[in-house]
Each structure stands twice: as C-alpha cells, then as structure tokens.
Length: 332
Image (tube, rainbow, N blue to C red; front, top):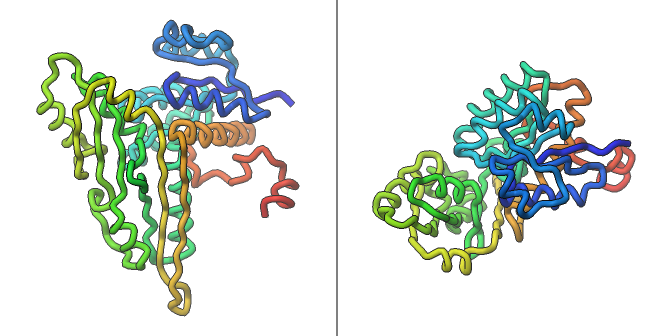
C-alpha cells in the first residue's frame, strides 16, 4: 500500500515536530516542506524538497501531496492560508483562537466544500483532544459544565499560540507566554459547584518579552494587555527581559492541562470525570495530534467527503493505524 504523502506548510517548532512525528507513522511520509522563506529552511534541511508556499500550484504539482499540514500561527497566518490552501489540497491545521473557531470553521467549510477537499481544523490538544473531552464530560454528566485548565505546575505551561501572538506586535523581537491555572478555580469545579467563570477567573498569563532596539515598553505592555482573544480578559504579567535570559530561562516547551466535569448521576450520587495531558514538548504534542488527523483527513477524502471537520466529527478509528479487528481485540 502506498504511503500517505504529507506536505509540511511552515517550518517553525510545530513544523519540525510534524516531520519528527511522521517518522513514527509507517503509513506516512513527508513529501516536502513549503515555507515563506525556503532559503532559510534549506540551510538546515537537505533531505527533503523545500519550496515557496506562495507557489501553490507548483508545489502541489511537484510534491503530489495527499494532505498538507498547516503549521502557521492562528493570529495572522491561518485565517489567510487556510481557506486559500484547502481550495487546492486536503488540509489539517491547529487554529487555536477559541473565540473565532466558529467563524474560521465556516470559512474553511465553504472553501473546502467548493473545491471538493477535506479541511480538518483546530487539531491539537486544546482545541482538539480537550474539545472532545469537554463534550464527553457534559454528555456523560448532563447538566454539568466541563472546564479546561492549563499550566498546572509552578512553572506554568508554554502557550505557542499566545507566544506567536506576542511576536506579531511591532517592537517585539522575541517572546514566550506561560499560562497558569488558578488552583481554587479547579477545586470549585471538583466540588461540583459548576461555577460560571469569566475567562480571567480560571487562568493568569505571564509574558517574557525581548524588545527591539528603541521600542517603547509601556506602549508594548499596553498592546499586550488589550489584545482581544488572547490577553484582554486575563490578569497578565509582562516582563521585559534580554534575549540571553529568554534563551536560558525559557528554552523548553513544557505544557500540561486538565479537563474536569463534576455532577451527579441518576440518584444524586456525586461523579467526576477528569482527563489530563502532560507534555514535555508542547509543539511536538500538537504535531503528533495533527499527524493522526492527517490520516483521518485522507480517509475522509477517500470516502469522497468534503468540507470542514473537527475532532468532534471524526470517528476515533480514523485516527489510528490499527485495523478494525485490532481495535476490537486490543483497545475495546
């Protein structure tokens, strides 16, 4: 059986994670990389074709992908790239601006449906795995609210999407953002209170920012704290640091999180559903989930399906390399 040919669109931390993940999936292969800056990528990649992402027809013709995994950022890249590319090829992405997912879904659905392609959106662990767990928690405990918490340890968890959003601000040279869950908020949920949280009641955000020469720190701090969809609703701490500090103290990509729902079963008995992820590398975690969704996207396309899909729309078996018989025998 021929392998699924995957093009990696974007060669940042997630793109590199996707290439590593593909090596662990024997039914898939990396057909090549497309980037806004192919010359930069070629300096470190010699064993794969590297092409200009804007030359869409050229790389589709040359690389013959079954699916493209889009590794760009959610703030600026994916809203433009997603609808354009899913009009040409099956796609998978990790669009993670929760408040804009309905809008993004409809844009991708229209483009993919019109072209007869599959666009799997908002994959990763949240949105993605945690989206599914929230739905299941609410379904299994009707009337409960299922909540997602991130950054459970003292160091918090590094958010790639929020870090990318920081780096789009003029005057910011480099940045990292760490999310911290508020412990008392978790305990309120576990006690079955089903609180109606405002966004800032569950998490705080801590930013480490390297400024370009001459940048105004007060102006940039204000731009961060008022950025809609990312920082505006939250208690946000902004720390201006040197590049050396950032490279030394913020060099890793750990993250973790928890989905928890609490309620009662039929006779009023208390019940709690929890699901936790712990990742040594946030970008590699997202990449692994995206690769499994790429397999599902190709299976949907082979069934002549088209349009936009999320993890909520796809059977779990479509993500797995195992056969139906193996799933029944080993996983049920």
